[in-house]
Length: 223
DNA sequence: TGCCAGGCCGGGT
DNA sequence: ACCCGGCATGGC
Image 1 (cartoon, helix red, strand yellow):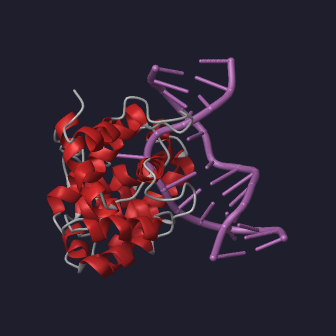
Image 2 (tube, rainbow, N blue to C red):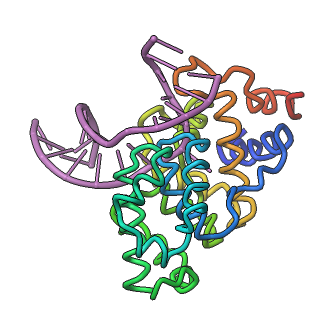
């Protein structure tokens, strides 16, 4: 089986094992943007609390985040960790949105996929994964989102060298094996996270009970 | 009880 | 071009 075939087979295996994940968990595209920044190296549970706080305080809109004091914003998002840095990062994104797009998220998302990614990536505090999460899950444009689980799972299945492949390299590998299908790309990344959380933790010596290997061997999903 | 979570930046080699 | 320390809360 070629690497390309494996990448496609993984999708079937994960979908069969866990079903559609329905990502991103948010009510609006703007909430996706905020969540993408808040979840950097942080447990999603903590992010949920921070977002609930933002909703309570009426701060979950570009205009409100633009107006709020950075120190107060930091206190509101405290449960998400790195709260001072993340408050600044949210402010940087909002500043870009206000100055260049009049605070209109749809105007930003009207950009083509490549320039949208560049624009978002240029914001201080937004790196490749956060940018791609915004492009895919908030703007609905086709990019593959790479994260720590993606690299770890691919490495443990011998598809890349552990610690060798960079972000873009992994992204290109996945993109070359998959169609430009937004729904599939959304689901694929979400499924990798689902599998990673259960079977591919950082410290674990191997992917215990991972459904993928078994699927590849037996040609059908693990029970 | 430590280790880890859906990263990214800035300064130093 | 890499490498590393710093950033911080809450869960298992």
